[in-house]
Image (cartoon, rainbow over all chains, first blue to last red; front, side, top):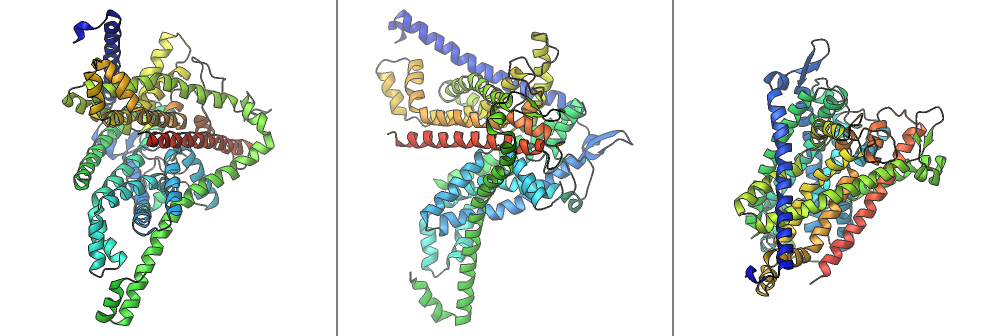
Length: 285
Length: 308
């Protein structure tokens, strides 16, 4: 067919083809350079000692164990609050709400929250939780800030999975004499579990990757603390620690090791989210 | 509304149990309602606090002087609080990232959705997803180590940390979401459109560029606006590569964005000072930018939904 193209058309066609392949190749190169650079520079510096010790000027050691713990703590604190509140809001919106205006208001609110840059969450988190509520910089203030940030994700994914539960299930439960809450607890929620899990994984991914919102709320501390101690004392997560080591201490080797850990974590979380998402899709069909 | 179950309950169970059950039902309903209200309250709180915290400094400095003043020297003996350099840097930086990142992203999406063999597309898609999830500080680190020294060498500058470096990092950062969303939009284009175009004698290229991209227009537009949002709100990646000096924007000069101005000075701005208040005002300006963008995005999505 292409034999009959006019020269001008064929030239344009070939140019577009070249353009398309160049762009795809360029994107591939960028991907490989970034992933390659992180693995190349990061894996070499990664050692058991780095992972299990803490940074100390006295002993002249550098370790990221406290930051690993802080990241886990902040995931725990944020998810313990965001998960029930988010799931609860989603249940209200899909199961209970009769006022369409209120539903639209909440949906507008969650959409708005999704678009707000994390530095603004950090700013408001600092204002609200530290200046006004009087918390100290630490995991609690940071975690609460992140709750606001991940709430939309939890609400939206839960809502989507609640919508995939067939109406017949609900009608069946109600017809058998179940109350609404009983129905939600025994019929709707178990069937929506996959979606809630997907939402949680996505939220955890966002928490792990967050830095700007944590600078002034969770702080820069590199000291090893217990869980309850760290709630109210300055504690840097892995991402914030990366920033500190890279731009304030000039320890690029350590920074790349953290980047490498974050890359692997992101990969695992993506994998998990895809798995959960696929199960959700299958159920939706 | 009278449910049939209520009369059945009364027959089987005692009255007190019935009351307890109804109390539980109502309690749970109230609890869920509170959860819904909390999420709305957060948005209100954020907006109200940003406005409350941002206004005093603007009032003290003067709106015009604050927005259009070209000199920011918060800690000088003769302090000056003009944020025009930050605004322009944010606008130029975002525009630059969009100019570089959007065409690249859209064309890559066309390649992924239409040209690439499924297996290769799968691998590339996984890599793009991985990049979409990587924390922004990691981009900053890679930019700081790979990009900044190269720019320094190529342009023989005293420091490679400049607007150009920030633009490139931002362009790479907005690439994954643009590729992902555009790819989804392109895959959703009905096969019949493309088949009809091919049957009419258009080449594959003409079909993809003139039919598929046209049909996926609103999805791609949403992707672009999302990319803009991500670029304008990014802080940590560009603070590491932009040099962080409050210059008027120029490609090879060290610059400061709206976001990085907040991030870099907040840690040492003393409590209650005008400097700190002005930083909140910068947050307010950034917030307004984002809200405008959101409104624009909603408009695009709404218009896209109306098309047949």
